[in-house]
Amino acid sequence: MSKKDDKKFKLTEYTLYNYSSLDVIINNLLLDIEDLQNDITIKASTFEEAIHTNDFRSSVENEVIRRDEKVNVRIKELDAERRCKSNLKRKIDGALTVLTKIELDLVKLRYFSKEKKTWIAVSSELGFDKDHCIKMRNNIIDKLSSLIYP
Image 1 (cartoon, one colour):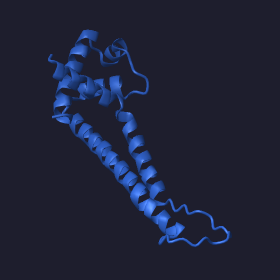
Image 2: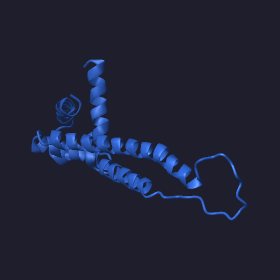
Image 3: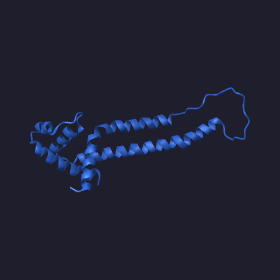
Image 4: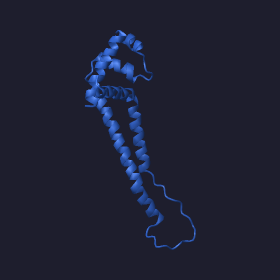
């Protein structure tokens, strides 16, 4: 296996291990975006003596400008990250549809369970030898990596 293939293999495994948390991450990004869109913090009014300057903008105008410059940029960044995670999840979902039932069961047991199962536990649940499960895993990851990361 070349270094490029090895990196792709490891990246695909990492992606599968983190698949279960993608929905939570996407939802949290949506909540962060919503919080920023609803952020209307404005300084409290003070009753101090007015100081006359040549400044053409009030504190409210400055707040609006700050919001447009910083908050909108952050909203765009978060939305881009959300779209990226959402697309990754759809890619994984699509790639999983090409697996056989046994291959899908192996992926669920090894990568999607809350606690990582050993190959012995996975093989006993599937009714195969441990070495056979590891060979299946190699074929599965190769198949999925070509679909998720073409």
